[in-house]
Structures are given as structure tokens and as C-alpha cells.
Length: 119
Length: 115
Image (cartoon, rainbow over all chains, first blue to last red; front, top):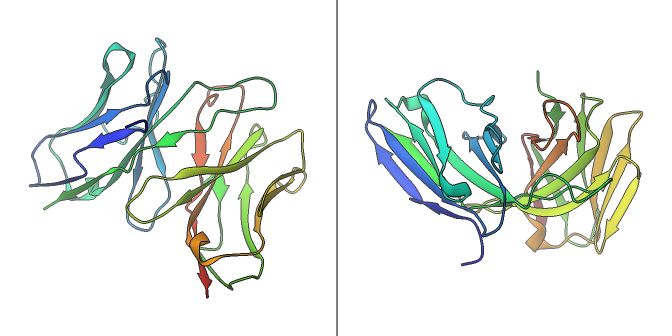
């Protein structure tokens, strides 16, 4: 498809296990974002990749969270030693970049998310 | 400290009437604002945006108003339709500084349009 693809769509795992969430961005999009949405909450920024620049990891909640983006395309978000508070919908988004020009901004295209449940 | 706030978690309106969704922000560095719409079990989709050099942007039934002095923006939907029922997220971004390129999202407002 032409949109952002995330897998798996649902993941249930036991506390303490590691999980990997995958994001396939739209082809040609240089920017990739990960967000987390806990029940009843807004979108919490986690990490941002832009081209070959060092990623902005300022939103990662703990050192159990990490993400990489291989070849400027597919991204994997890894959560080690999962905790129950990690249960949330993890959303990935991509965009063409930051700005098209003065006064314009490139919107993000979101995948449908991975619903992660930690038992 | 939440930089983008949507103080109304929910809003219910009658079909055909106007829906007004509000958003407040605190960071004066924000210079671009976007609204996203989200249906259950789907990711948010971009709806409409406005730059800080404007105070109004209109696209069909959707109009966004920006009041920079009050650090307030609103999304107007008129006439509202049942298919507009969704969660609406306000997002803000800054062109410079350490937050350049990122959007900060509000917690969302759930709009219900009754037939």
C-alpha cells in the first residue's frame, strides 16, 4: 500500500519480555516519528528521525526504549523488560521532511498503530 | 508542563449545527498549527493547518482561526455531519530551536455529531 504500515497490529506479551514494533514509512519520506498513546491520553512524542541526522530521542521515557531506522527507511522500536505501564497504542508517522518553505509545514502521515498489552 | 491543551475532552452537537473545537498553547515559539482527525483503531489523518502569519484558513466545511495574542486556536466545522464524529487533535510546531520539525499534540477532543 501507499500508506505507513505498522506491524504487528496487536501484541500481547508478559511483563518482563522484550518486544519489537516495526514501521514501514511512505516511500521517499525522510522524516519518521514514533508516538505513544495511552488510554484516554494524547499523543506522546517518543523519537524523531530526519534523514541522516542524529535522531531526537528526547521523548523516550526510559533506557528500556530504543529505536533504529535502517537505510533511512524501515524503523524498529524496541522495548526491553516490558512493564504494565508500557501498555498503549504505539503510532508511527512519516513525512517528506520539516518544511516546504516559509509559512508552510509538512503534515505527518500516520500508520494505524500497534496496540501493545502487557499482562 | 503541557504546551498544547485541549480543555474539552468531549463535545456533542446536532447534525447541521456548527462544531467548535478549541486549543490553547503556551510556547510562543510555535509558528505552525495543525488539526488531525482520528477514527477508532486508525491512525490520525491530517485535516487542516494554519501558519502564524495568518489568522484564518478555510477548507470546505472546515475553518481554523488563530489568535496569536491569546495563544488560542479553534476549529470550526459547519455544517456538522455524523461522519465528522471522531477524536480531533490539535498540534503545534516551531520552525526553529531544538523543537524544530516536531509537532506537540494536545490530548484530543472527542466530537459526536448526532443525526
